[in-house]
Length: 171
Image (tube, rainbow, N blue to C red):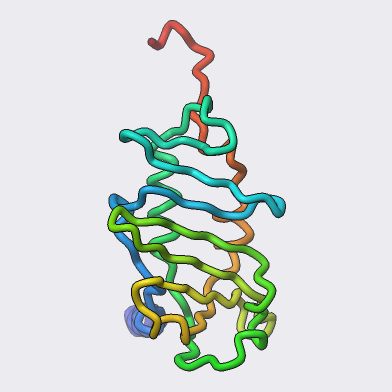
């Protein structure tokens, strides 16, 4: 009985995983700049000579590992549902986005992620990705985990700074 229950749970998990779709993965190593909203202000980061800079205050020391982790999270977004040919994006709150994220890649192309309204019934937040190199992608609307907006994109710009070590004996 236990093995049968375990097999059933495994099948359900596989079916759940099979239903998720990668939204628009990008090569995080090719990112030269990214921007997102924090408290209605744009936080802009740029890679200059191998060093990440916070464009509002370029004196900050930005932790490249934290940037990489953040970009990996954003590149790995998956959707539980996709509307293939969304004609009226206002139905999904995308005419007045609640959050945005944009990346510029080393070839000069860019991706813009617009987050719309939440779907209370299915659970999740609507997302539309604009790929300046692929106009066909702009017709898709994805339903993604709301934690992307409430957690990942809620990070303060300060959270990317190198943490000061108070223990000088460890150095």
